[in-house]
Image (tube, rainbow, N blue to C red):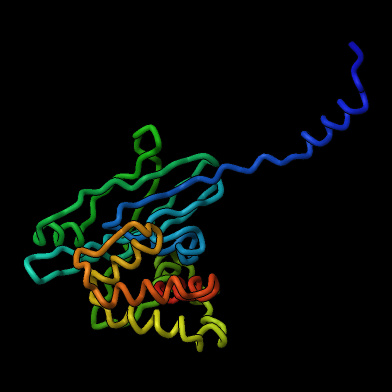
Length: 238
């Protein structure tokens, strides 16, 4: 049998030039938690509030416990201070934050004051990581620059990092972006949590089917462009 050596050589070159995509590592939290930042960048830049993809290497994840519990017609939100997690991630690692899910407000409040969780690898073993909670600041604080607080907490006083840049004027002035902000601001705490979950899992539904803010926000989010959605996701973390 005769072989076409030129064809074999050409095929080898082609196959050798095909790059195999790198496997991204993942870090995931339950829906009772929220990923706020990855390496001081908004988590949405890496995937979302509950699961992010990162490259191999050392990373800092900032998370917080954030769960709403209903009691009859009332609902209360329990939220911890941001928790800074430092860990080294291998290229194909799958890290998952494991924490209890609460149904009673008393237990949720106790957990929010002092969260107790474990981060495990794909085989269920505890990962190597270091965690510390950002101190509670006294007084009323309608807005906080968490990134600046984290940098100062870690001893970096250069303030070289600014908050995410505001959306470009053409996006900020768009009807879709304006209406998404309007309905989010009009929503209660549970609806805001529901919409954040829905943004990464479109099968998620709120407890109350006739939830006008949720349905209207979903309508405008679906109507928005990719750039408008991205700007809205960044706005949620500001």
